[in-house]
Amino acid sequence: MPIRQLSETMINQIAAGEVIERPASVVKELVENALDAGASKVEVVTSGGGLNLIRVTDDGFGIPERELALAIARHCTSKLTEDINDIRSLGFRGEALPSIGSVSRLSIRSRTASSDSAAEIGIEGGRVLPIKPAAANRGTTVEVRDLFFATPARLKFMKGERAESSAISDIVKRIAIAFPTVRFTLAGSDRTTLELPATDDSADGSLRRVAQVMGADFPDNSIAIDAMREGVHLTGHVSIPSFTRANALQQYAYVNGRPVRDKLIAGAIRGAFADVLPRDRHAVTVLFLSLDPAIVDVNVHPAKADVRFRDPGLVRGLIVGAIRQALADAGIRSATTGAA
Ligand code: ADP
Ligand code: MG
Image (cartoon, rainbow, N blue to C red; front, side):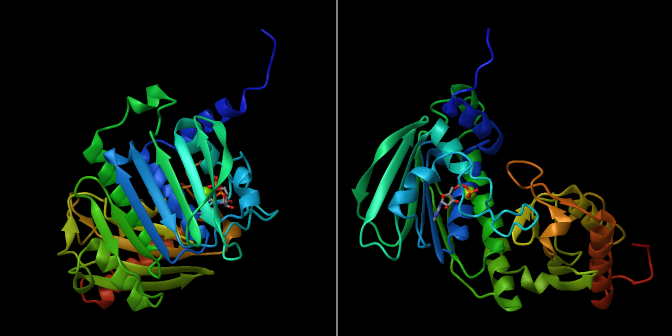
């Protein structure tokens, strides 16, 4: 057979295989887009664990009608400057919408501040539908129906409505912690509802948002972290040793506002608590790292939850040292036991 270029739809479905693992991945991408658009309110509605419907509405700056077709075209983004070392938005790959549109029925309705009407575009299993006029307030609504209808093999791997709903709720919470000034709501067809009113971007506002997510008893059972080493700033809260969990699911970490799952950070937290916690107990932690975007690579995997630090030892030392010091200052452990 001669060598040929894959079709656009097939290319997008292959990309979707990496980025869109389950309904929660769609919610992550759509909520991140809303935040990149400067939204102050993000509303998520789902049904059937997100497999029947995911709808994300924001009050952000919207997409002009003439750019709607580009929004669902591969590798088209309004976010990337020419420098991959200076990524400040959550998105930058221009892949999410075309990928989702290749495996579902997706529609985008949007209106910018300067336009007096909205417009809508659709894409179903990769087939683009014509743009039509619509009614909407300023902002964007993206609706995803029948996720994975075009890729039945992926559909078979879904875990059931309850598990998918709970993954959706977890991702909304995870993102919301980093954006305390934004109001988030989540309404599912089952019991999964969430309402997180906006707080503010002070340290106190950030802690109030954390309490909305972690429970009202977290602030009284946690200590503040604030440390700086060689230009890397670490802030957040960690629970005291009497307030623990049987697993590490409530350990939230952010790098420049981006939620990450990182072995190095998880290992540093374990190390910091090693001599005050039994091995089968885990602290509840919310840690924010802020550093020069040029010394952390966020382009490791399409889902962008993995990061690579240029100096992992520095980051590990900072986290271990800061938590141990904070525990010592709170009289929980001696600052001299154990080396960082
Ligand atoms: P990326 O986020 O990497 O740019 P996406 O495929 O997620 O790629 O989105 C493509 C483009 O569509 C974005 O760069 C942005 O210009 C536009 N867009 C998507 N969602 C929204 C939204 N909620 N509000 C405003 N613009 C949006
Ligand atoms: Mg995006």
